[in-house]
Image (cartoon, rainbow, N blue to C red):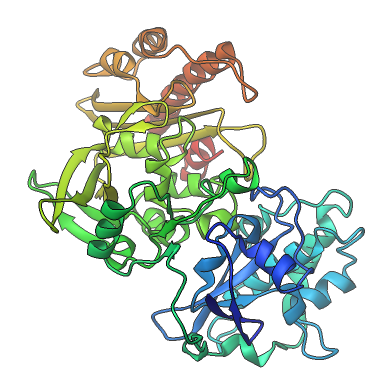
Amino acid sequence: MIDFLLNGQPRHCMASPDTSVLELLRDSLGQTGTKEGCASGDCGACTVAIGEAGPDGRLHYHSANACITPAHQLQGRALATVEGLARGNTLHPAQAAMVECHGSQCGFCTPGIVMSLFTLYEDQHADGTTPPAPLTSQRLEAALGGNLCRCTGYRPIRDAALSMGDYPHQRPEWLDLAVDAVPEAAGDRDVAFVQPATLAELIAEREAHPEAPIVAGGTDLWLEVTQRLARFVRVVDVTRVAELKAIEETTLADGREGWWIGGAVTYSRLEPLLAEHYPAFAHLLHRLGSAQVRNRGTLGGNIANASPIGDTPPVLLALGARLWLAGPGEGAGMAERELPLDDVFLGYKKTELREGEVIRAIFLPRPEPSRHLRVWKLSKRREDDISAVLGAFGWRLEDGLLCDVRLAFGGMAATPKRAAAAEAALEGQPPSPAAFQAARLALAEDFQPMSDVRGSAHYRRLCAANLLERLRLVMAQESTDAPREVMLHAYAH
C-alpha cells in the first residue's frame, strides 16, 4: 500500500514493487495528462513534481521523470501533476504563459514542459514574500534541458518561461498542504518494497535478501524494467536511510580535510558544495543528465553502477576520493571499511564491493589552494546525453614543475580509469609541449578503447589526446595571467 497526496488529495494504492509513478498514474489512477515518451528518462514528457518537507518545514517540489521513479517512493510524499495546477478556470502562471506565448503545437510534450516550468516557478517563489530573482539563461537552460519538443520549437517555450512572473501569483492552496497530512491506511505496508530508515536496518535487509536490487534515484536500475522488461519481486530503497543522506565535514587519519558525502545524496543537493569548492565539477553536473535526473540520481549510485561512461567517477579519481563501505559483520553486527576509489573498479560493471556491502559515503577532499582541477565531457549533444569520452585532470605546480598529477578518463576502457603512463610522463616535468607530447603518446599504453554507437576507438584515442593538448593550452593561458573570463571560456565548454 502506498499512501501519498496526489494534487492535494489522499491516495491509497496497491502496486507491485517494480511499478513506476507513470504506471501508477496512467493505469491505476486514470491520470493520463502525464505522457509516456521514451520510458527511459530522456524526453521529459512524463515530468511530474514530487514534494518533500524541507528543513524549514515547507514543502519543496522537485521535477522527476515519472517513467523511472519507483511508485513506492511516493510513500508519505506529495505528488503534483499537470491536472492539479489550475484553480478552477484560473491557470497556474506556468500554464497561462505557455498558452499566451503559443508554446504548444501537438501538445504531447507540453504537460512535461509545464511541470518543469512549474517547479522552476515554485523554486523562484519559495518563500512567497521575497521578489524572485531574475531568471538567468543558465537557470532556464538547466530547468528545461531534460524536456524535448519536436514541433513547437524552443523560442516560444523560452518566452513562456521568461514571462511567468508577469502573471498573478495564483497557485492551488494544496501546494502548501503539510506532508504529515498524508493519512496512512490501516493494515501492513507492502514488505516487497523495503524502505529502511537506518543503516543498521539496511544492512540487516541486505544480509537477509542479498538478491534484492538496491534503488536510490532509479535513473539506471529502472531502465531494467522499462527497457528490458525485468520484474522485481523485492526492492530495497535507500533514500530513507538517514546516514546515507548526510554531508559531514571530516579529517582523515592522514590529515586530509574534506567531506563525507552520503551514498544517497543527490546531485542537486551536492551542487552547492561543489559550486563553492570545485566549480569545474559543478559545471559538469549541468551536463549530467537533466534537472529531473539530477534531482533523483545519487553520487553513490553512479559509483556502484560501475559504468565505464559514468560522469562522476573520473572526477573523483582525479581528486583522490575514498569510499566508506558498510556490510554485514559477525553475528548481527555491522562491518565497515575504507578504501581508495582507485581500488574499487575491477572490470566492466564489477567492483570491489563484497556481498551485502553498500556505499555509506564518499570522501571528497577539501581543495588545496595550489591544486587545480579541470573536467571536460564530450558527447553528441550538450544537455542530457551520455559521454563518449570524459577527461578529469588534477595537478599541482611547484617551482614550475607538475606534481601529484592525476589524469582520469571515462569511455576509454571497461572501467573509469587513470592514465598511469601519461601521468608518469608529466610528473616532475614543466608543462611544456614536449612533456605533453610524451603524455599523449603514453596514452596508447594506458588505453585500448572500443568502438560503439557513441564513437569509434580511433575517435576516442584522438579525443583523449586532444583533451591533454587542451589542458596544456589552458595551463599556458593561465600562466600569462589572462583575464578570468577568457580562462573560464577555455575550460567551461
